[in-house]
Length: 208
Image 1 (cartoon, helix red, strand yellow):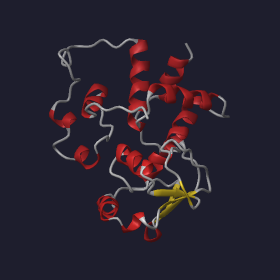
Image 2 (cartoon, rainbow, N blue to C red):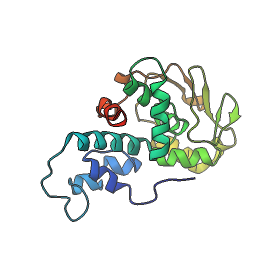
Image 3 (spheres, rainbow, N blue to C red):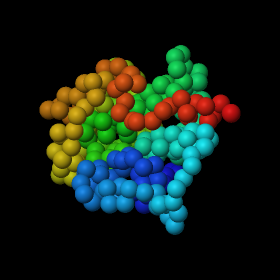
Image 4 (cartoon, rainbow, N blue to C red):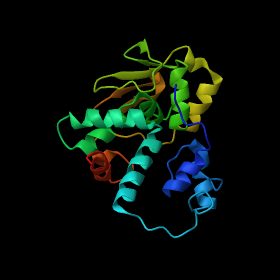
């Protein structure tokens, strides 16, 4: 399974924005972006003149890093979005939001998307009563995602859920905390997705 294995704090610094890749650490003074609010590397503090292509590339890189998706799969999602009715940029973000690892994170059952990905791979969650261990599984309206009964007894998972219980849950998810399950009430609208990116730049980049 291909995945990014280097220091994730460099990604936030490169994009100049918190991507919340390390869970609770991102909300504290230990956040690398709070300490060094400039790009990593020898020329990170140099003056940069952004080109049109540069802005498009940064929008794409920021989005795929936010969701923890590598280039090949991100481009696949873009192709899916072009075949859906509506605006391609909005469709792309909706597809990314519907990934199972993102849903687990949004429900507050993981501290970060990376942790959610790991927990999904380990088989801690079900979709409509069936165990699913594929982080890229795309949920649909009406699907019910839940923590497996056996996993609910895990002290580690209990601690993770408790630590993230205060995180706001988006309206498109109907979370039943006592039963550790969530129903996909609807697909999110662009206004409900909190990623600060101009998705039209991504469309322009791939349309070239």
